[in-house]
Amino acid sequence: MSSARLETFYARLLTDDRLRHQCLENPCAVAAEHGLNEAEREAVRQLDRVGLVFAARSIEAKNQLRKHQRGNHTPVMKRFLFMLRRVRNLLTRNWG
Image (cartoon, rainbow, N blue to C red; front, side, top):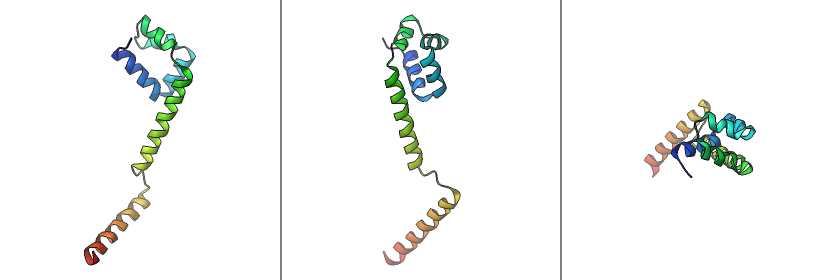
């Protein structure tokens, strides 16, 4: 039993803390608010709660790691890295 609406709801549960907490408190009501039919609401009710929380935390940790790896540097660090690249380019041009 998989519908696009149910899959979208699951994706939101994994990424939206507030929705996930509401759903853990009252899964049937939250599923009904999002327009899921009876069978879909039952699937949400039977969802592995521990697994849901674990998966959401894992996704959040991976997102934080990616965010850090993308280079969210302070302006001072960005300037330093820019100057470092310029020096490297000058050195490779003159001696490389």
